[in-house]
Length: 132
Image 1 (spheres, rainbow, N blue to C red):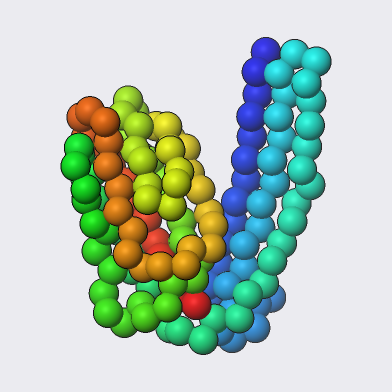
Image 2 (image 1 turned 45 degrees about the vertical axis):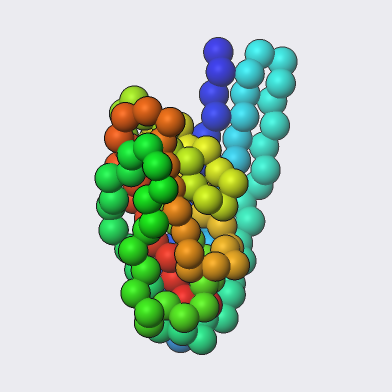
């Protein structure tokens, strides 16, 4: 039996014992595949957030270059969340990431200029890019 579990929690509000203007990312990874069993315990990271804006939405991504809409208020890229909410089409994201249907990623990014594409069909990509 193959099992991969990943848990990620992101908060950019003054909740969960966060200080004002702070982003918290929490992650845990558990893998079980035959004799291979590994676990990365919960890791939390609190990052100061000087910016107050974010760009978010769900975009239909198709073949060719699709630039994710990010308003000018998100001046400096910080932490980003991407999730392919499609059921059968893979989506590529310009931060060198391939998301299969249902997969997600949380990572710090260096630019607000993010593009996405598919090799065939259309995928719905849920995203949020927070200012640093």
